Image (tube, rainbow, N blue to C red; front, side, top):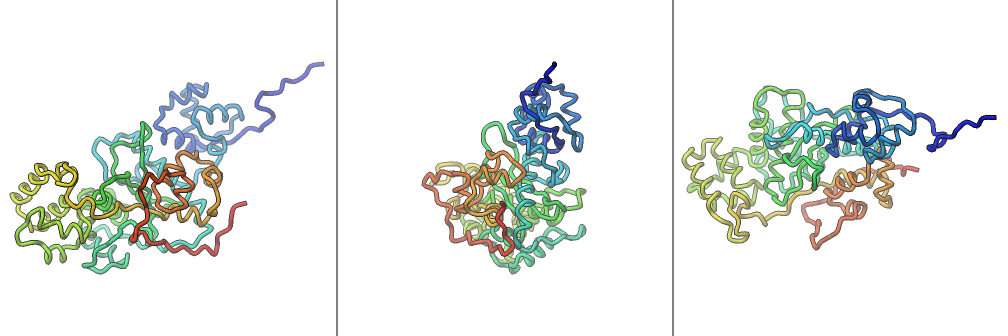
Length: 406
């Protein structure tokens, strides 16, 4: 009598795994396919076929080996993808040296946010989307005025907290404090559309201690979202910069408030009120013929050569007024997750709700959000810094449709 050997992995059935999930798990860690294949004990060509296939049914042992090699649970690979973000759909405020692998990594981060939103949104009634679709022929300045109006700001009104205004208008913002080797070192910000129907805007920004740079990056990406959802021709970056400057300080106000004698110190009041860096104000004035090229060059030389008396750094690195505002941070992603899944869940429980994404990536995402729940769930150390701000008012969500997941 012969006895059939029982596999060490038990009698678990074959499992269907999805190529996009394999790719996300690899790219968000910037691993090479050959490295993963070798660690999983399979050929690189077969691994490549797995990634490029919509789905493949494999033995549980093979799925487990892949999960071990990538550090993700098998359930992640067995979850059908729901966020159809691709590399070509991203728009950037980025350095020219951004590599393809870094861009792919940002796609995977976008998919993570999209998966969280997809899992949470059916349980909530969210703010209406207030980012209009701008006609292709509309100039950036006119587009900025249209977006200002949709967000509820008058033509000459300062925008005190840009991220909060966008979140009230249905825009998701993710601040991600990358570290180590697992990050896109050369990006400042990116934007794309997430959700099953690609109808929810997302702005991703690199964590920074510069409130000026953060505001300009967010305004720049908002320009991409409003003007370039379907258009890719033209100088998109220049258009987005013009949009951002006009959004933060409309030309009518710029012309009215522009100082007679232009110096760095005479521009400081405009910086404080409208939340633009001195460098951005110099460019805004130059583009609108309020500064000559000679004056522009002189002001930039002063920024490069002078030192801030408080920090001792050159003003081009840390401008005067760098302590006048808090760096804006988002909260809508965390608010949506808390309202949808409950305030008492752990980061591990959240991973189970969000297609089994690995908890360290969820923790990184939530650590960039400024709610008390996000701090608790992601176990952020306070380190003496408070996220409380009079500007960071609550995003109202209707939780009548909230249902705790069982």
